Amino acid sequence: MSQNCAGGTLAAYVPNSNKPWNAIRVAHVYKRLGFGAKYDDIQDGLQITPSQLVDSLLTAAKNAPLPAPPAWYNWSAGNYTDINTQRIDQYKEWYFQWIADMLNTGVREKMALFWHNHFVTKFTDYLCPSYMYEYHKLLQTHAFGNFKTFLKAVAKTPAMLVFLDGLKNKKNRPNENYARELFELFTLGVNIGYTQQDIAEAARALTGWTNVTVECAPITFDPAQFDNTSKTVFGQTSNYDFDGLHDLIFQERAVEVSQYIASKIYAQFVHALPNQTIIDGMALTFRNNNFEIEPMLLELFKSDHFYEDEAISVNIKSPVEYLLMLPKEGNLPYDTNILQLVGYLTVDMGQQLFNPIDVSGWNGNRSWINSTAITTRWNALSQYLDYVVFALDKEKFRELAIDVSGNSNDVAVVARKITDHFIPKGIDAAGYDQATVALKFSVPQNYFDLGVWNLQFQYAPDQVWNLLKWVIRRPEFQLM
Image 1 (cartoon, rainbow, N blue to C red):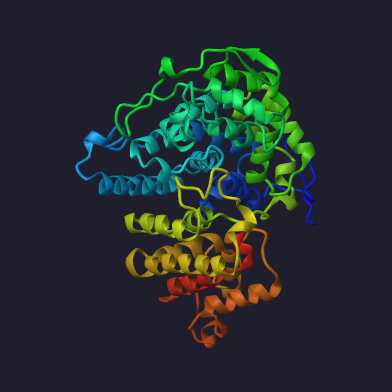
Image 2 (image 1 turned 120 degrees about the vertical axis):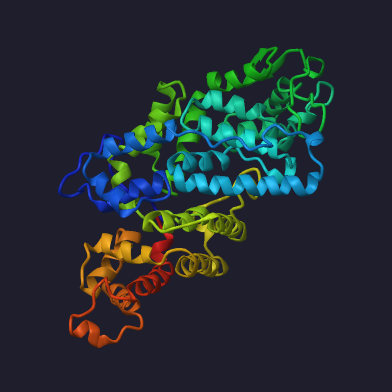
């Protein structure tokens, strides 16, 4: 069985000759915390310390303004003239808005995407764009905040109340769906620290969030539907209500909650295979800071462990990451058509935003790759590269090559520098030879033999385009 061989500790990373602060590690920060970085951003990152870079990225993410609410942010059924058509159009509108936000506000949206795959809801179950907007706004707003506050807010949002049947959870007919996932998926983990009786009693504590006037209207608490009697959860008896039950989880199962959330963050942002020592330390920091998310993230992203070679380029990019990192890292152009194309392609590739496969979310990592998925990936980015050439600005390919190579006129150097920019840990010698052939493209060999080729050459953008079509098919490009 594969093992996580990354060493290091949660102590702050101090660059040294064996583990230098270099472009590979700066790119690693940007890939894991966001959706990659262009060449200039990586060079700027080299001028500051790892701690300063992490601080700056998280501070910018927290302070970034939220997108303007859509015109329909508070619509209920009565606002629609053609509800079936309009709400699908609104879903698409906000889907494409999130893709744009990922390119513009990558770190916040990377965290929001993580929480979306933790606090799962499915648009196809609730079908209310106003609910989707409110849910998404919560993911963005609470991404770095207090987990206890976040949990309570998500639990009361209409998207969750409909998706996990809180709307049906009434005094004389309790529904256990949300209570079960609250323990199993949101706080403790499967079969950890609770019993079926705890689920049944917790469901009674959560009754009453059942008041809605019309479809897609706000959902409020109805005291008449609340089970106002004693419940026993985790061996503790009281007349628990919504807040009381959620508070009890952190009171009685603090270690389990902290371990579970730390392990999920570790798997997403560091390595698919756990390192229990690191997770234990993260969990302790989480508890010691009253379940504030940011201190745990800062400790992890500044840690010596995070910058280990064995933690770099080991996670498989999700479809969203695969599609967005190329334009982000290449500083390549995109427009509304591209945002829409990316949106449709993520669906084709199995990562439909606002609609994970089930309540447990996308499995991630190796589940993204199979013989069919890999060709879908190649074709998706090939479409994008073709669109840049024929509809946007292919001169951006020349600019990319000049930036990363220092305007070299050595075709092998340029090929290597471009490849290394997108695959920071590099490839083997045979691979670089293939990259050079791809960059030469259809230019006669004598141009290179005579030393007359350079990046001002007329066909240089087309050559870079051809090289990138080769790069996106490399196995190493699937990793981050």
